[in-house]
Length: 400
Image (cartoon, rainbow, N blue to C red; front, side):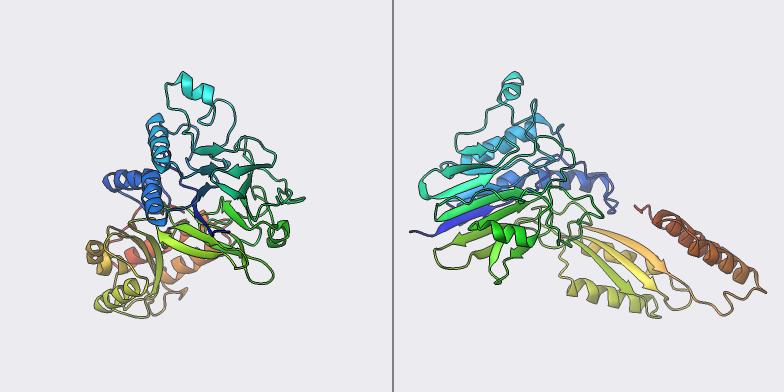
């Protein structure tokens, strides 16, 4: 029985608006980054030529919303057709759901004059589990299902699990939330889409599970430490919830051996979110420490970086002014000043500065939410600058 090579990716979100997301992108750079997000199909095609897979698995959220431009859909279909004869399986998620009137609806495509899905592409179109053979591999099956709407799906898809086929290589495609997932995009509270546990996935007994929905690469292990499946994560970093290297996955399955997982770089740049403690440094000291921090984080000239400075710098030192010249070192740099300029008697109630600071600190302690706290922090910093006879400089626009 020959080994099986799988190429896996998900959560492309082509057509994303890239508005906000805490990075303050310029219009010019945002347009460039949109094109990079939308080029995921071509990058997958290039990866396939390198990997030479037996099958490509795409567990959902290929586009961001129903209103994705038809030109982007055409681009995606052309890339999939170029993958032939390699079979491609798609399990639609909660963003690219397979309901009527969408891009998985052949009648809808015909009405718009758009190309049909290529013959080498199989799309799961039911909410219930379905098992299909892999063309050219008598020893392999794929079991999958589809979201039919964008609504939150609270049911547990692996309780009970689908029946494990008798094929030596039984592949599972699942778009949903691993309950133990702790990546930057992890949902809070009960808002989990199609939740499942590590024990449920392991107990289902499939040879490999291609997982979609979460945007960070994460391997899900069985109790014995072997890999039951993995999230490839989104292939392009769009915001602060998609930091670090992005990848496609090459998974090799060989009878009697644990799955071999390899990551393939899928993005020409990365998003980094780093924090620097001011530690009493002056302007030169801050620049030196920031350079060391960027080097340690692996920043390259093409990257998008948010650098937050906290703590107290040397008296009279403004972190934003000291670090502005770093912006030429990366493609896009956002500087956040969270420093506090210490001064003797700043909380002395006999001084105007002390009374002002004490009042704002009391308001900060009673602030009901993150937005209110940030507004009070900025008011305190700017007010103290004014009371010390310095021109207040508002921080850059930011998302709270």
